Image (cartoon, rainbow, N blue to C red):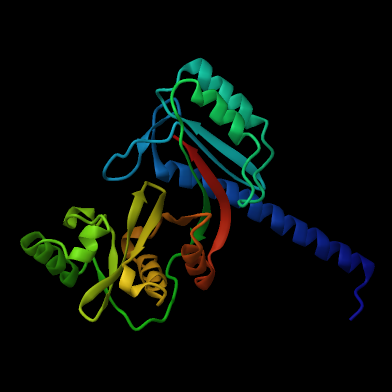
Length: 267
């Protein structure tokens, strides 16, 4: 089919507009994700990570997408140092490729390393997790807000955690951060999805598949089930994974998740 030149122009313009809207939306989503990840001070400094353990926060958090970047500084960083860090980050072009580190990262590390040793965590790839994803799997799903879920937690409190869960860091039932779902296979918990971060506007999923059940679709099953929990309605959902975690990236691909950006932490 041969399109008139005017039609081609209108089509190209529409595509450019759509791409611009998507990129702009990605930056808005990143702002929600940052607000979900951290507890912030009134001066917009990071106080701590927004998890039930109130984990320590990185000194610098840098996130970005092709439409712009976001940088946040921990509240205990001196004002003069924070100003230098923000100035360096402001000169960085929008982070367009999560597999290429931001050019400013080395400079940020140099500024912080004068005070104490640093550790860099990431990069992480950030995906938008739609609500009510459908994924067919044979596993039996148990939700934390169900009667069966309550019975499971009561049993763990009475008898202790199964060895596989304890070895993975779930030392007691309080580590099932709500809301959560588990996949059951042969009367064992094969995988769990839980709220790694839960904010007013957003929630970020945490997923753990236990060793003997890996590479069998259980992570995708619990991720899809978690996205359908009614208690998460009204929040924007996020799925993040390290750049080196190919298994988690395969889960994102299997579920058709859309990448919205990337992040890196300097601790």
